[in-house]
Image (tube, rainbow, N blue to C red; front, side, top):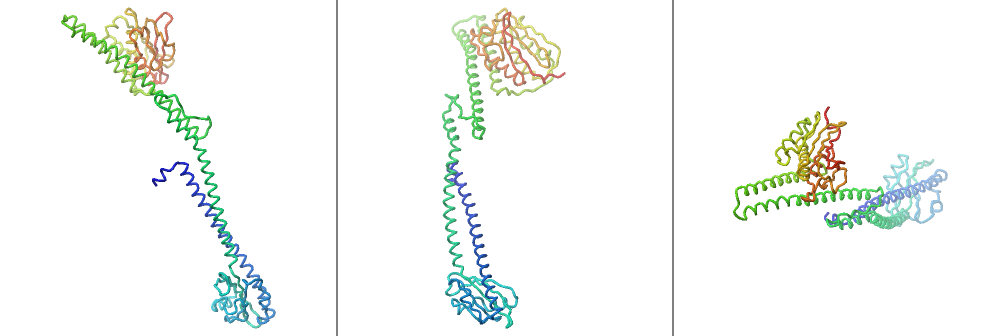
Length: 463
């Protein structure tokens, strides 16, 4: 079994095909052999009956003693005849079997009493191979007699031997030729698989753009290649997203860590006043808060796979939803007097925690990258069965990204070059929106500033 498993697939397929073909050809050969043997035996029996009728006719008209067996029946040395009485006594016999009974006396008496013919096979001296003998009862004026005619089965045996040899040779040659054809056919059919294997071996993390060859057909191997290419596309996209996440996270984490390090080094550099130490600790606390927020964002992005983020839907009003955001931004010193909330009546079915985090990220992003005296407007409303939440700022807008749907890691609004922001906040917002079946779009306002809108699709709004 281990050797069989180690064989190439084409070798196993060819071997299985050859064995199956040999079994079929062997079965057909046996059928032909048996059928031809039966037909030959039927022909011999027909000849024996014909000869027996001729002898029986002479016995009826001329009597057993006057029948001339030799001239009538002997066409060759393998044909012979006997005439016996009802008791089995031999009356006349061909010279080939003069001193031998073609049938036992008991069998002859049985044929005579029953009045029905009988057939037997015997081995006789002077007769090649086995002899087949037919006994036919005859009733004459002088009583009952039995006519026995026989023939050697040597010719039949020779013909069957020749047929068996022919079938064996022809079957072996046919099996070998068809197995060779099957080997070539299987090799040709599996050639695309080998090409796919070689191509797959060249695909690596350093060159993920390569794909398996496909000729655009509709056969199983082409469909398999297409499916594997789609899988490779998904893997490449996932790897690319993971790399971007690591790159952007490293970029985002580097700045607050560097600021913390500077503040701590400054505090440890020499004698400091209480006010200076408090200022350093306050700065470290702010940067630690930034690190906490970034850590939460990275955790959200790590849990989101192709927009599949676990959500716990709950009925809530738009006012309650934005109250959570209002309380969160109220604890931010930079948000005092700069954030305005506008909400319409309506109830929605969303995950309040995730949506509040998404809106909070947009507000924090707008505050960090907008001017110090700028304002941020948060609006929530229902429009044609969709939940729309927009966050607008008065900054410089998106400098590097065209308006439209937000990509996984878009540049942030405002002066992103100041901090080198990689837009983890917007990536988190996009993941949360997609988990709700929605999307996020960004645009620059004509009067200046940027607008980011979360749209939750129809079906999540409860009348």
